Image (cartoon, rainbow, N blue to C red; front, side):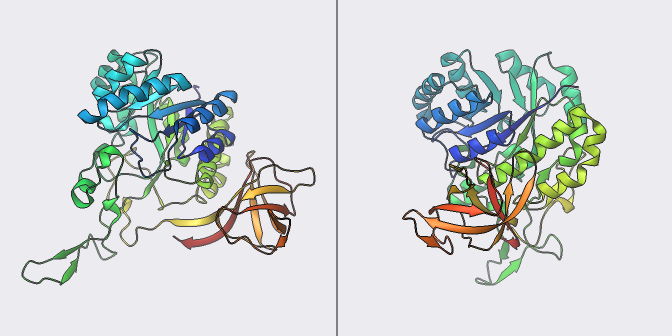
Length: 411
C-alpha cells in the first residue's frame, strides 16, 4: 500500500513551522507576487528562504504557488521571480497558466512543476497533455468523483502523480475560476484578490420599487445561496488511497497556526493508522472526527467525491465559521521549570483552563498558574495582541506546542 503525501498550507513562517512540526510531508506557500491568496500574509523572499531551510533540515518539501492567470505586465517579473526561487531551493512550483509554465521550465528546468486545480484538470487527456510537457504532478479539479480519479490513474503514465484536495473551503465556481469578485468588487479572483462574494447575503430590488428588497430564497432557511460547506474526507482515507491519489492536499492558506496544527495532526494520525492497520484506523474514526471538528469550520461535506452535491451541501442561514477553540499562541524558549515565552494571539488570564495541543496527538488540559510581562511584573491577564509574556501552567509543554482554549461560539 503506497503511503500518500500529506500536503499542508501556510500563510506565513509561523504556519509553515507549525505544519512541519505537526506532521506534514510537504507545505505549499505563496510569495508576495503570483499567488492566488493575495490577502494572505504570504512570504517575503527572506522568509521563504528561512522556511525552506527549516523544512529541509527536517526532511520536508516546500512547494511555491505561482498560479495566477498572468497578463503581459507579469511576464518580465515572473522571470525574476523564478530565478529567485531557484536560488533558495524551492522543491516545486504550482502553476496553472501555460505562459508561467513555459517560463518556469526555461529558467528552472530541474524543479518540479505541479499543475494547479485552476487549470481545470477534469479528464485523462488533459493530465497526459501536462505530463507530456514535463509536469510531474497534476492537481485534480474538485469536480471529479473518486471513480473518475481512478479512471485517470489507470490512463496516465507510471510515475505521474495526482494531487487532490481532501479538506477545506470549497469554491462555488468551476475549479475556482470565478468572475464574481472582479465584477462585483473589482478584485480579480484569478489574480489572488477574491472578495468571496459567494459568501455574501443576496436580495432582489425591483426597478420600479427602489429601496424595497426581497430575499433570495433557495428555501425557507435563508439567502446564502452560494455558501458551500467545507470539504472533509477524514472518514474516507481508505477510498482516497484506493483511488491512487499520490498527494492529499489541505486547503487553508488564509488560516492560522491552530487550524494548520489541528488538520495536519489529525490527517497525519489517520493516514499513518490506516497504513499500519485498517482496524486501527476504523477504531480511531470517532477520535479523528472529534479532533477535526475542533478546527474552524462551516460544517462538512464530501464535495464531488461520491457524486454531484445536492442542496444539502450548502449553508443557507449564515456565512460565519463555527469556532470551537481559540488560538492563544505557541510555547517558545521552554525552561527547565516548564515556564515558557508566548507571543499572545488572544486574551487569556491566570486561573483559566486551557489545553496544550501536543504533536504526538495528546491534548493536555491544564490551568494558567502565572503570567509575567517583559519587565518581570506579574500580571493577571494578557489583553494586548502580540504581547510577549512568560507563562507557567500546571503542566509542562514542549517547544512549539500549540496552546488553545475551548469556547464554542460563532465567529
